[in-house]
Image (cartoon, rainbow, N blue to C red):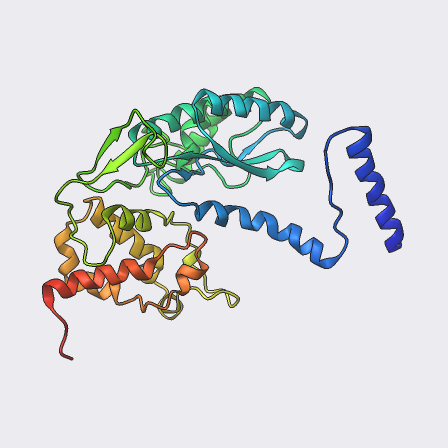
Length: 340
């Protein structure tokens, strides 16, 4: 077909969808290279935009891979909204409409026990709506720990076949224990990483003075880590928990500027995410804060050269360099500067 014929055909499709079937209120036709590239780039910008949102309430991807038959999509979207309303939760939503696939990320605060409890109930209600229309709880990103708990209900008698295969090929449960086949009955929230500073208390407010509308966080008078830089306990905790462990900082792609130290020495401790995990462990009390003064922690912190390339490339803009300056300052406060 000629270019003119292609444009005419596209115009007819748009007219059919908008005017005759009334399935869309607007449409943009992309035939030039710049327009086409824009459409390809838009979905790639969604997740980084979500990661960069500020505050303790985060878009959490625990029900984000749902697939329903495309003809059922309009009715299912209504069911989805009703489930979110029932649990008083707001969520981001994007997906692949032609495949019936939806990426749903409810906004919740993992440092709030009530929000954590809400996750399980919300997922249960939503997944049952998925099954009611003949869908599946995961279509693109596999099941993993966050969906294994529901697979027995989704697959019914077929789940016993999964168990038989597991016993045949992995009788000692060495390979990915707890995923797909789980004899322990783990809940959705059992494997969540801690995000609350040790000793932190939370108060429910009756007014709207809290930025998130319902909760105010107050640290104890004696936090585990006495900070050396000019930031608060909440600020450093937010910086550490902003890393979701996606592994983008392990990239060695030529087109990216990610961590030069990891490119030279590709071990997990050299990754930026390892440093966020380390600081979060100290702040939450899962590592003894006295270890911040140890040579081993200094050696790990020295793997950051403060180039900020990870912060620039990271989808969430996690400020690993500042976290590591804090870490190095902790060591110097106790041990002093080296004379060499």
